[in-house]
Amino acid sequence: MKIGFIGLGNMGAPMAKNLLKAGHTLSVFDLSAQVVQEMVDAGAKATESPKAAATDVECVITMLPAPGHVRNVLTAENGVLAGISKDVIIIDSSTIDPASAREFSKIAAQHGNLFVDAPVSGGTGGAAAGTLTFMVGCGDEAYAKIKPVLQSMGKSIVHCGDTGTGQAAKICNNLLLGISMAALSEAMALGEALGIDPKVLGGIINSSTGRCWSSETYNPMPGVIESAPSSRGYGGGFGTDLMLKDLALATDAAKTVRQPAFLGALAQQLYQMLSANGDGRLDFSSVITLYRNHGNT
Ligand code: NAD
Image 1 (cartoon, rainbow, N blue to C red):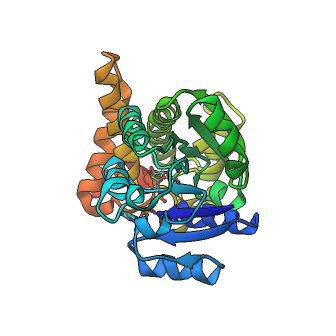
Image 2 (image 1 turned 135 degrees about the vertical axis):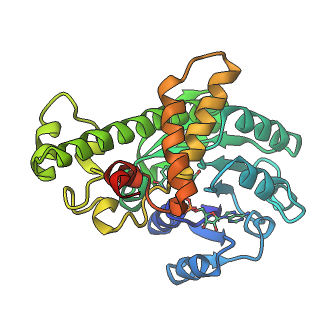
């Protein structure tokens, strides 16, 4: 299939590479010339704008930071909707809010296009391995059409319901992830201060009731899990500013349905402090530095 792919960052680049491996043809666009060159080396065709990437393709995929970027890429003069043919499906895998996804779906429908929200979970490791979970919000017909494309990038493809429900699932999951990473950081830093070896504590948590995804695969204490961002200076992975954005999306969405989000609001403040300290680009597991460094600041 001919696919236009826009947004080749930590997640988009490995996802696009898996599409190439599966035999799809890619026209790509990103603001960073470096990541575009990397994709060209892998076999993709570089384009000059989202409009050009969306021209003469059968499907468009966007993997961008936040709702504003998706709006701009879709609706700008040189945007996707200016280049796309009728009936081509737009799959947005960025994490945005359900209300924006519904609005973009309406805008796309005015151009004769279907817009599907299909955010992902599984991190950069899952993106590289092609084992992501996709949470898909759209009608049955669109779902049947896009499922094979998503299967080239993910292992678990879940049809959550109509437009916006994929994003609802995603922000609820990340609300929990942001809270659980902060909670694990609190526990690991306390254990260190109390004199227990972090590797021993990490192992005990993983065979006890505190076990979670963060403790098993992404422990925030350096040296506990060699493959985790914490063991490489918190580089790559899932940026603190992106987690901050997701917690804001979740707490804002909670307001719209008058639902309390006590712990989410608290966790949001922790990541906000990290970001204000200038560490917004570090992986979100660096939230542990707020606990480990507090005596020195
Ligand atoms: P990233 O910041 O690494 O990449 C975003 C890319 O979008 C960058 O290459 C940037 O240059 C590009 N971009 C921004 N504005 C653009 C524009 N107008 N036109 C073209 N390209 C533009 O982010 P990421 O980690 O790849 O995350 C992307 C999305 O996936 C986010 O919504 C994030 O919340 C979500 N997500 C990330 C992870 C993760 O572990 N990193 C996991 C699940 C979901």
